[in-house]
Length: 119
Image (cartoon, rainbow, N blue to C red; front, side):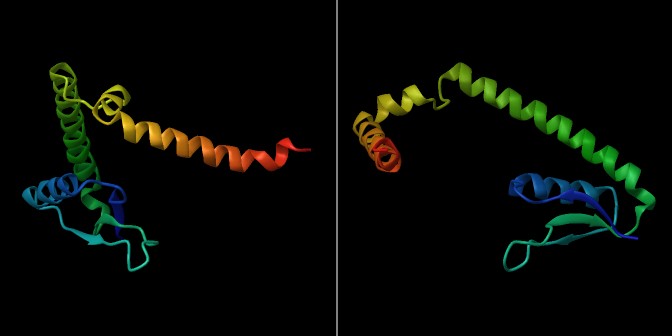
């Protein structure tokens, strides 16, 4: 009986490709479903039968641990090099844009609250 191994909703393309490659390298038979035309179906990677489910899950768990370690290291390297964008870098890069957005935000907030303030 088919069993869902890996949900593909909001998964980066490189991660999905890595998972497909991992399953193919280990000769684990799988198929893939998409979200459909309207995006309401379950996109995922399914195993045809659950006889190799334990092996597939352990491979996937090891892959995800390695991916998390790599992503954390890349994030820390960007932080140390000062390439990570923060609110302050955004303000420093384009102060006029930030000021206009804050003015627009305050205007929308005023229009939204004004009818309740006159009671």
